[in-house]
Length: 459
Figure 1 (cartoon, rainbow, N blue to C red):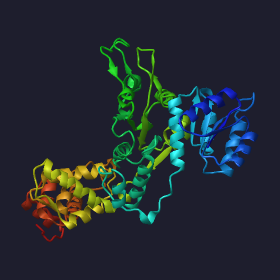
Figure 2 (spheres, helix red, strand yellow; figure 1 turned 60 degrees about the horizontal axis):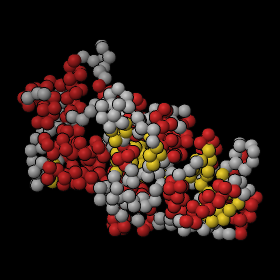
Figure 3 (cartoon, rainbow, N blue to C red; figure 1 turned 90 degrees about the vertical axis):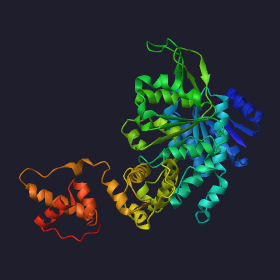
Figure 4 (cartoon, helix red, strand yellow; figure 1 turned 90 degrees about the horizontal axis):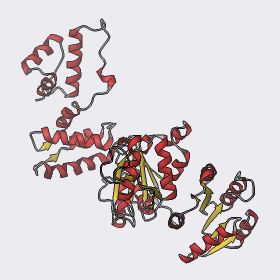
């Protein structure tokens, strides 16, 4: 049973007819008092309510009614209806626990989509941790593009599997290189839209001046350089899923334009005044703290609530070190085919050494390290020393480049320090240390003797 609360009889009738046409049972109420009486007399699955019940449009009555519902029936989903000019009311309602908000005039298709999503999410059973295994998840869902069995990751995959069949918007948070795009793809592959397009958009790579053209498309002649029609990303993603990566990089003007589209589910192609309808699932990702950006006035709060109906945080690689050997094995298996080296294998010491690295670049950094090592290693068995040599070639942080202040060390002292660090890093492997320092073995031996550095050759 869905309860519709609005003091306008025409709005109640319109919503009731629409919902009944699609198989839902409804009840109506014209005031907060009447709404609470209906809620007490009938089992409800969902509430759709206006925010204003008087000439005064402060929305105080609506917020108070929402708070009462959440206190008495905390699991009951509530969808708010408000005008575009009163979105701040809806944002306040989302803070108080509303499931979603819709602006007037609404799109019937989008309203029905929001209703089905809210009902589906509210009916999901809680996950029992002890029953959660990767094998069981793989029997239920398609996570073939994701490697790992860390408990944190399994919880995320279970959640993704549950919400994928709905049209709930998803916000994926996590550091760079953690695999946010793979999670977005998993949402799509397990959704009812999986046979439709999955369109990826890197918002960090689109300038503010090109945002409308890129996202909405343009007609030939719409502006000076528009020499041909262009299909926008939203049109390409229609009926499917659009993945908006790096959404935290979007400037404020573009945020307003994006919010309009996500709110109204309509858009206009530049140079064409005809509005077009949009039917999409929205998945966003960011490595920034959007809540902090909202507090700092750098990200719109209404857009924040629009995109994060479901929030997923992807753990960093250092939080799931036991998955590192699985990922390395996966990369090596792929590179056997790519580089025509079927005999590639990994030594146990190499896997253990890799598990102990911090990997600030996460999975992306790990993959690059494995690939560099495969390309350079002469033997098919990849050892810890092979990975160590390539880790040395990685990007150097700014702090690591700093030289001692003038006068604090002589050249001999600097040279001795570098040799000692290299010997420790390469475990006294003379050949590797000499190669890393650009010296011959004989020249390195002379310097070891000169500086009195003890060594035990391990070539």
